[in-house]
Image (cartoon, rainbow, N blue to C red; front, side):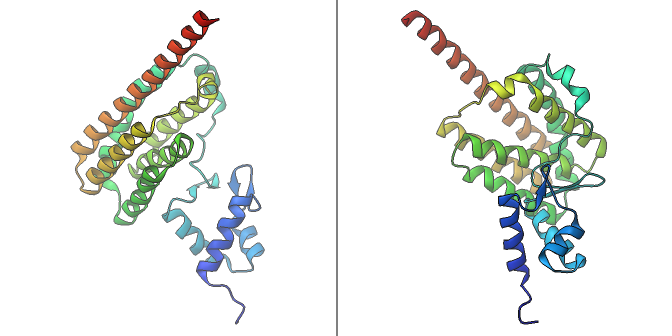
Length: 239
């Protein structure tokens, strides 16, 4: 009994195994039974540890798909490959501007107090991001959690479809936008405001802040593309 690890020790061990990939297979955590056996604990206790990791946003559970260490992929992503070949950033932003304000409004109505605590932690991660890459990961998780908190399976499927198209688009793989430090600060502050309106149960305010935030993202992306084109033309003339 004296060697029985505490929940904190188990959580630390599980996080370390996630970081090294020892507890992962194809981007998902090993099944609950396998994790319990590996850590020599009961499944009930393993489930409690996973509940804690889900609450702080470390893992995402999807019924019928398993437990993921990042937002799970859209179900049946392959049908979107043909669409992804034709879609440009403007197309994605047009759809996001229609969908995500509604998701934010519903999240403000339906999120539980426990879910809001998780969302606050995920929002803070976007503020703490040191660079564009870290921000991109934190931003994806934050926006996905808002979609989840709308508690509408059909809406979540639509949002998943948007993410699937973005990830499969050639421009996503080719272009890694590098936001300036001031842009990262501004976008993080908008996340903070977005969380505040959702936590205040202000549906209309949440929708408006989300729309404003997405417009800022779109404008930032446009500036980066314009700057890149200008630099390319400059380089051509200097050759």
